[in-house]
Structure formats: structure tokens, C-alpha cells
Image 1 (spheres, rainbow, N blue to C red):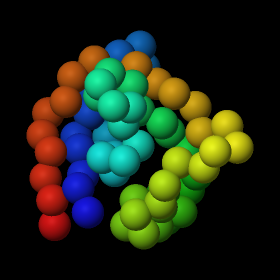
Image 2: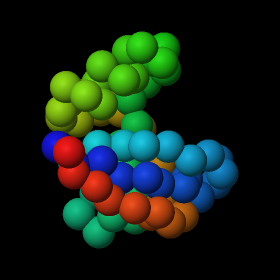
Image 3: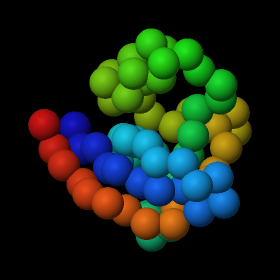
Image 4: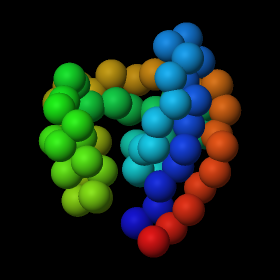
Length: 70
């Protein structure tokens, strides 16, 4: 599993995301619909792929701080 620390462009937030949630050029990231912290961590830790149903929104990435594997 590989995790990436990102800063969102317009929203200004910072978060840890799974590397598979990034688009190939790493300029956008898919974000799951509104989740509780517990559910978000479950998605993150279970290597959750982005579903093809369009329920996850794309958000612009301002910068990537780090990428790490466990």
C-alpha cells in the first residue's frame, strides 16, 4: 500500500490519500462521498479502489508533500 500526502487546490485542505486515488498525472485525486472519520480510515486502510459508478468526485491537487509505502 502506498499513501500520499496532498494539498487540495481550491479547498486548501491537506489529507492523506491512497496512491490509487490519484489520476495518472497526479494533478487530481478522487475523493469518496461524505464519510465519517472511521469509514474514511477503513477505505484508506483496505486499499479501496475508486468505484466506476461516478460517486467519487475529482478534486485538483495543489501539491504533493510525500509518498510512502507501508
